[in-house]
Length: 406
Image 1 (tube, one colour):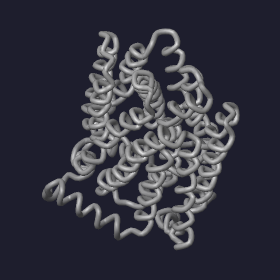
Image 2 (image 1 turned 45 degrees about the vertical axis):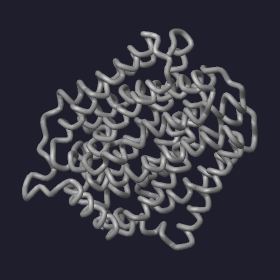
Image 3 (image 1 turned 30 degrees about the vertical axis):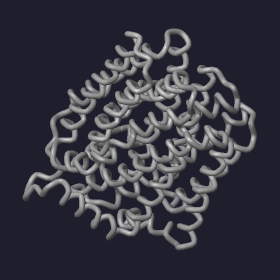
Image 4 (image 1 turned 135 degrees about the vertical axis):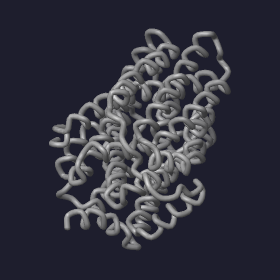
């Protein structure tokens, strides 16, 4: 936890926690709204598709923005726009709008804004800590997000029970003030790239793809991140239809189950931080994937809500172990001039998989049931992990760490 001695990182961490808590409360409220309005898990998947897929299309532009403009300025603009969209969600519900299309459309706009800011959000932490503490900072940054996944749904459950979805959207609106204030007070920083010609976005994107392909560790991280996005990340969105169909849970219990994923991540984060420099990234990712699959299979096998909560805690622990490690592998393996663009490719890979997986899982939940769908996702992840292991590609994740230690 020594990274917290850096004042700028410490302030950013807590403000991000507050802001993301509101976002995660809203992220749980929207699936509950869509499921309640339509009674179809497919609509929950469609909402995820609308909120996540736009990040893929704006990825090349977002990466260039993060590397060629002040990351502070990029985030100020995107977070302000996200605040406006949260206000629109609150107004829509408060004025009696009950069309699922309205909420899907607003989530699509929110996804576009989020996608434009994601590479800058992921990269700005490198401006706050020295390189030798970057891996710990990335892990704690992920822990902040996952703490929000624990607190947000819990707070959202209380607000939903007492006041309804409109007030959840209002709570999210207020939560943006934390990160906006921190960014406003932060000194303006120079863009990472300040010299040379400015190539077209698509040409720059193609150059980034060549850069990624040239690094074996980067390619392995991209593949694994894509698989986790396709069959792992959608589980967080599918908790709502899973809980309602398997456990017949109320909205409050469903929100608490969704919070279990973030809680598991928070509980394991201190252990990950302490062991970052002791355990190779390849070992951490491999073990996390095995644990992830086992937890999902347990969730599918035992239709008891307490066991489901324990399984989701384990999913959260595995999620942060895998994703934070892959994130730090990429951050340590690239030059700062490429960081935003490479992170945009990684986020595009993950975010392309997530909506496709969520939509597919939503359709399967409606057609074959929630438990077989989760079991199938676990088996798919296990097969890909085994293929990477057989080809000996896990070891390539250690390249950036070894160069840094030398």
